[in-house]
Image (cartoon, rainbow, N blue to C red; front, side, top):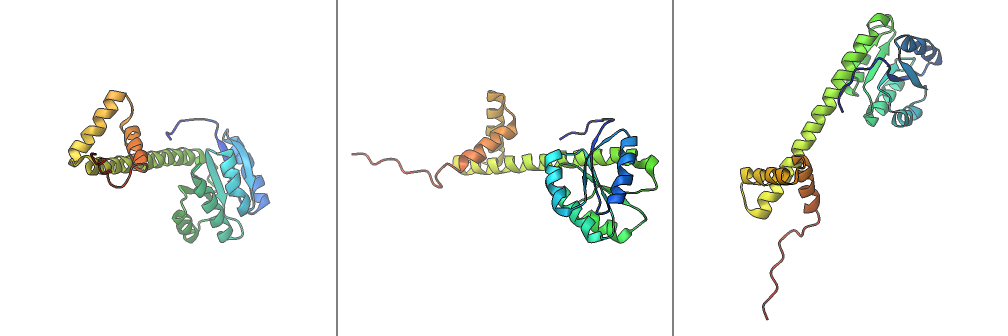
Length: 200
């Protein structure tokens, strides 16, 4: 996932208070974005996020902080977009709990002129986070593949890595794809090489 600048974002808004959703939607539209979903119930916000795949989500703190925290968890679980908490007034305790659940920022609803800057920053950080997460995943796969090759071919780590790199070059495929094939293929191999058949 990489960040791309865009003037028109698809936005999910969530708040247990319908009147707050009604106030928020025009502000989002005035920034040049489209509200693609308005959610009130916790059980609906996760499926809406999965279905709509918004670019960003706003979760407002309504009457119940627990309700808002559950909404945040449901959206974050889908890994579709960054979540920004919208506060009517400062609430450090709630922000602390929301940060534990994966929000990327919070703004107060009195700072409409700063919203776009916050959205831009959050989307960049979200893209960087996913790029970094992907890099760690690729590295883990490569490390597992090296371990498999070291065991199977009785070679050291540099030699195992060179095997992956040489296969990558000769097949014109990414090294991580070669490593994934080794890891996936390893599941099909017997735990120990089978003994050669006895000579008659």
